[in-house]
Image (cartoon, rainbow, N blue to C red; front, side):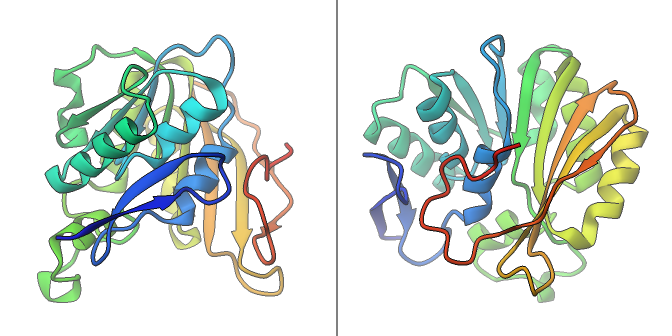
Length: 236
């Protein structure tokens, strides 16, 4: 499959490898990286379902932090590694090629300060209803990991009061809330993102805290219509 090297939107000198036909990263990953709060004290950062490495690259660019990304699909994990090398970030970003469900074999519990994830959005019902391109189908559908499993593993890997930042579709926000409560998360912020403010939201960004207290802030909705730069899009 032929790959191409693209500029990473308006981030200075950052580039990303993608396949011309097949897997491409989405704007959702950029929005998640901008939405997350990374503190000076945060040392261990993990990106689940990292794809071709957009989130780790942006986090290192913005905060000069080391990041571990996890990607199941070999072809896409290799794209991430090539993108990391292209941006000179090999010493700061590492990629684990495995299923997120296997991470407890790599790390002890209570290990990470921050975890992020742009996971598959859609439930898997039958192979006839998913894209026959396996790179796309696994990235979009819950074939390898389900939402509940993702939230559970994030809870086991985070330190007490560690933060989990998740991007998903609004239609599944109710499930996120149920599973967050089930696995000991407090939901602290919810941000809806719209193509236009006159239309329904296209994605939702959620900030969760392990063993966090109740008290959730619903942020003002944001529209990406006419946005020229995603850098520092979220002021809260």
